[in-house]
Image (cartoon, rainbow, N blue to C red):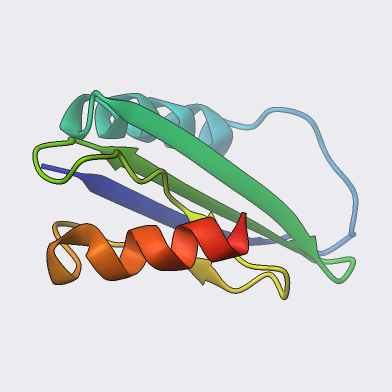
Amino acid sequence: MCGIYCYLKCNKFGESTGISCEDTVLQSLKEYLKHRGPDAFSEYKINIGCKWLANFAGSVLWMQGSDLTMQPLIDDEYNILLWNGDVFNGSVVRKLGTEML
C-alpha cells in the first residue's frame, strides 16, 4: 500500500520559529508513512508567498510495472501529483514522469 502526505502551514510572521511540538508530530507521521511504501520515499517542500509552507510526500510500494515511479511528480510549472494505488496500470504516469523530468 502506498501512502501520500500533504501539509499546508501558515506562518503568520513569514519566518521560521524553530522546531515545534507540531513539527515533531508531523515528522513521526512521515516515519509511519514510509512503512506503507517501503520501496521509495520522496518529499517536496515549497514556500508559497511569504506566509505559507507546503510539504508533499509520497511513499511507494512497488508491485506492478517494469519501473518504479517516484512521487510526488512535479512538472516545470510546479504542478504536483501524488496518488495512492495504480494509475492506469502505471503506463500514463511513467510517460508523464519521463516527460517532466
